[in-house]
Length: 350
Image 1: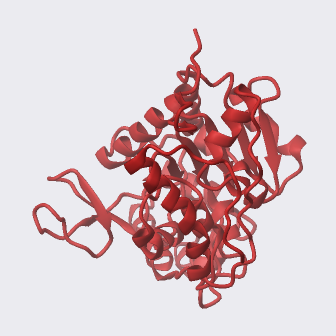
Image 2 (image 1 turned 180 degrees about the horizontal axis):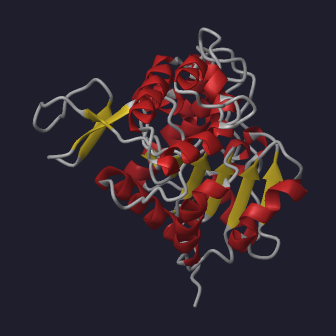
């Protein structure tokens, strides 16, 4: 039997989370012209060239031209004869990703972090540091969503003893020992998401969030065949959500809708979905920090909220943070005084 979302009608608030799953396409959208120094963010199709793995593969007589990295790495792993080469490839990839710096101007990751609340969850499959770097430069704003790293991340590290995670290069806040890098899950058919305690814990957080989510946004993640196990984990979590027949799924993908939907049909109920080319077309950007409220009040209470679209044209991060500040203030007033959300547009003139 289904359930209704956890609406607090007195506070005009929806306690259910907005879950956003991000893939490589999201990081490309965050840095379409490359990182701060113009270095490209690799995708599986161009990773060998971008990271400069060609000479390393040539030295071992491995044919790699016109071969995407996913196929290449799976073949190397299955052969069982290239252990040292695989370690060298992994080291080179980690070093390249760790060298990347997020562009100075606001990126879609800054908008994503500031457009969600602490009840919400961002789950990333990406190794690159852009989302973490965006978090670090916005963390003082407070009330940011939780981030989980489904394939590990070069900017995140852990303390196994204390079961704590933090930023790469830092020490554990509990025992003061240096944090250890997270394991990066590579594109092989059987990733075994339960073998690494950190990865297993991140997936558990996501599954719990999916069971309660009222909005699910998939941003730049194409559900590749090598991620069959991941898709099944996502689906099982979503199906345990008693409100998923009322909830909405948004898919942000630059491909035509007919090419996008087949991967996500098992998640979709009836007409409860939308496909957008840009994050700025989603509920999160049309109703920043109030996406679950706006959708629930429109669909269940017949009380549509006026659109409060966050401008996509900010040239400085400070200006974006200032724009969001009145929404944060409203949240603080609600928490302290029990004042309901207004559902009205932001009154700051940009």
